[in-house]
Length: 373
Image (cartoon, rainbow, N blue to C red; front, top):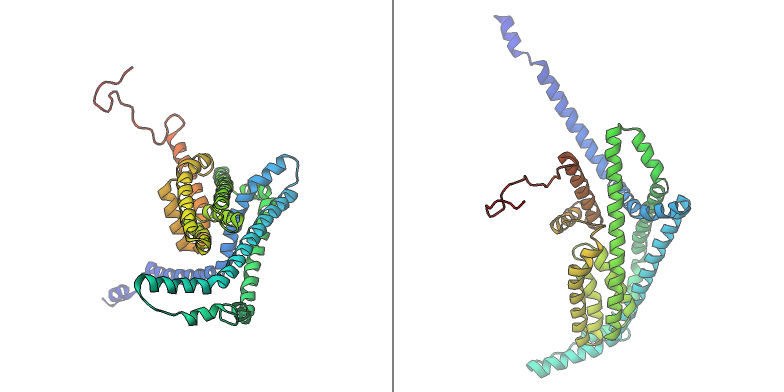
């Protein structure tokens, strides 16, 4: 009787193993989460580098087929991208500095006009002398640069950190592009034939879609910049070239809301010089956006970045939630690659003679009548 009671009180071995496994698994999971958080910046850098390599590799492959060594071709691609980024920054920075100076010089006159308009229209007498003094010699706005000088150390630290991350991304991207074929062979050699084929297909799809995305966005950005340059020049908007390039680049390379962000700067600049011109600039931007959405973009992206609109919008939201602005930039290439791979996999499952979306054959038409022979 006592022996039977001892057997009942003894905990089964599988329960002990389950308890130990639960605690060990929990500790390992906690440790893994800590490691991922500690390496979060490096993981983001690696992801950005991989997709930057996917974007540059088609151009480098083209140069390699023409006899240019991959290392030299990669360096040429980097120089082109760096020159384009530097030129864009210089143009926009010059335009912003010029318009800021113009605003500070003209602000007292604008304030006087607002005071007069309020008095004439509503009979309200207000004086903005304190605000006006901010824009006069010795005022707060005039001394803005000197006040910012006190924060140079903090701004410098931020710039140094940004430059370090950019350098790290550039370094990883360079080696991923220059050694792309060698890296693929090395990965494939360590996998089974079936898994190697899957990895190669995903790699090729990602390279094709990301490269196609950059190619189509660049073409659309150039067209947009040229059209807006002509419109801004005709409307006599200040700095038409810089503002047109701003609209072209921002509207194409910032997903979902890029067109709205791009239009704010030229409209504000035009409003500062002539309110009526600002209205015309807004009309031009909206009209061109409709033209691009319905005529240009579908034709240019048809063979490079086929992706459903709902999937594109959802992927941008998900990417922003996961990785912020970086996720928003990478969302469309990732979604297009996933869509293309899933479509290809479904087609292979359906077989060569029966497409995945094929409907069963029917001897009757939709109206219930026999189909014609």
